[in-house]
Length: 412
Image (cartoon, rainbow, N blue to C red; front, top):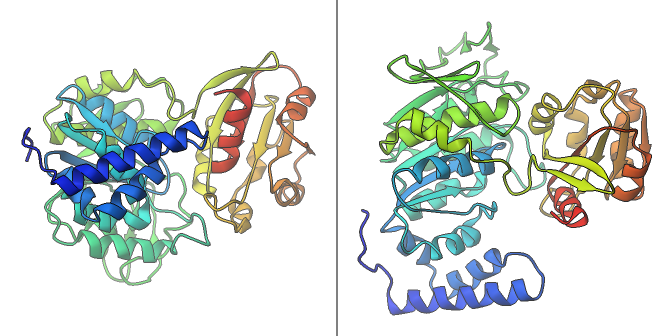
């Protein structure tokens, strides 16, 4: 597949040029990177552009409810050991944003692409990927994402018979169900901290048995497959049983799991685990996530959490009490306008932390924290929250658009 022959027709070249022009205008107007509008313009002029742009690339797709952007970045770093990489590093993960990213990768060998769960099957059809990484499936934006079992079914149907190597999390029953329609699956024991969406069998609806790290359905026999890669403490175990140390600058167990899946993907393309994991150490932050910034003479660590599983993982990596915590929640289009998911988050894990609440939906969050018997203060903005917070580094946790608002405010 890889080569330097130009796959683009005159129409496709015109579409790419027009898309880049539209993106430049958007950037000049201060409306963000322009990748989405650029991709939309390009696809309007050539609806087959995404497929054309992918023809000379070894494409790797990454999809999940949580961890897509970070894992995409880790895989991209690992694969740079084997050749130039193009990637949608800023997380524009629907067809327009993906098209924009690939339009800038004419000299690349690999395309490492984060894909929104809803669009995975369609993007896979267009790009003929060599590898697809499936990390997890859990409840997300209720007004735009399908119920998790329906999403797993959508993946299962879309990936049936795929020629790609599917690297899939053996510890998530929904991911296993989705990936099992593919003939070539590499199972990774990456763990599953959030289990509340996986108590019923996706195959038959029976009750899932979950002894220890294992899982199986007592009614139909659907069960955890035997993994060939595994996260074990601070090491990745490869198919030969060798243990490779994980040294990341990114915090938390979830990122070690992302590194394990990334190492398995890199191995598909001949990059050894030791090389892949050493390269991943270079990643300090991902699109502002995990960055520690200075604001009003204070250190703020910026953390993104968009759904119950993401908030649970984030609570596990913040500094212990009495570290102050700022929580910010919006409910704009990109977040999902339904905030009922707040009631699925276990906010009692914040007991002992001084909590400061802001964002468009600060009152929704305040009610939830009141019921969880947490001590908190509602603030008008970040400046007020930082002024009120006791000394020490502040952990700032926000959902998607609230996170972007905060990044703009701190100049990140």
